[in-house]
Length: 329
Image (cartoon, rainbow, N blue to C red; front, side, top):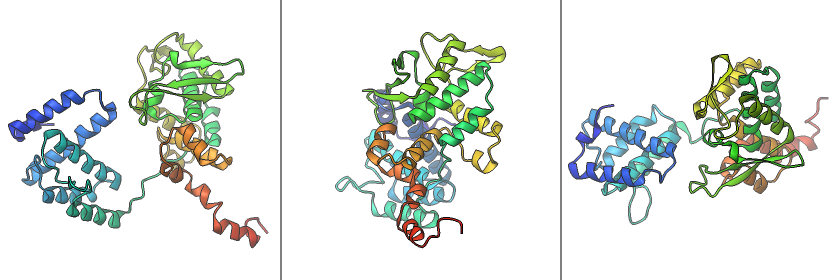
């Protein structure tokens, strides 16, 4: 990536550098990386098309949205626009995206986003939920090597807690508390919805605790990271797994379990979280309890994860039952 600061006015570059220094640690690391990557992409695009990126005009951002709409998912393009807004705020420049009086997107930006949504829709690509049945399939083929014990513990903890990848790999030995009833809790010290680190407790079941304990004993973990890389000859490393490692572990175990390719392709690091929500909904757990368990702040994502289950309980399902069409004749 070229040095993009040289393409900015001196005052703007200085303002951005000051903001970057002050904001360090104020945002989640993933958020910081996303904003930087998004604004770098926008700046490179502007350079290539002969536009000023800072301050950018409304027309420039409108053209950028139209250009990206054919290449990226709608959710990604909306994130780009949010990052451009943040970049202008940080530089002390007037936002080309938002009217400061109303706080809403300017009309050309609204229309560009509407064009994109009409062409591609707003629906996000859905990952495959790692439900309890799929969890069981993954565990069947895992051996008792150090890597096997780690992966079995990671899969079961991820499912029970519904942790995001970043939260899962951030777990420490000190976060685990076991009870006399076979249950245990893990403290989630910081998460996407708890940036200031007030912390919440997540429950794990006795079978998951057994898998986690087997891994801890095998790896001789007494402090520090719970989930760690493993080198050749079962040599456990002291550092943490990465979020990317979690995705690869789940993908690899899904392939080894013999799951159909159509399912494997949709398995991601988010799958245990989605599967937990789906299983709770299928078991009749109400929405507030699902939101509490998964630490969701709004019901929209839970509804998205469980929409196929809700369809089975809706008006059409009731009609089919009344017509005796839900059982084989």
